[in-house]
Image (tube, rainbow, N blue to C red):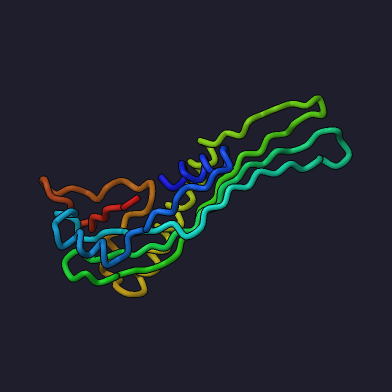
Length: 174
């Protein structure tokens, strides 16, 4: 993944060979081929910016310091209708995560928790994507926006084997 490539770059100092990113027209071709059969929408995104930061700061009035490791992501997304190939929403979303350790003057070494940083970053990116999709769908098609569930809410009530309200499906490409 892009995050793993960036982590290797930070750890080794070697730059990876750039890989051509798919474009919206490539995704539409994949939809036409039937790769997303059964999906009403495809959420397609490309990573725009990824920045790792690793900083040390002395704590004023003490002999301790903080070590902060953080990751910031920015990605561009398009929500594509699989039947009409219309782009229903397009936006940029960002995510961020960090891990801060307090180090004493004895030369403590505390490696950052990279998994925590990546988890926080992906969760905040996902929440930002969700908010942007809902905002844009309410502006363009309030009927479609009503089908989007709030995070953490239970699925729609069932009537027999069918849900009372149909929730559009989306496939996320990584």
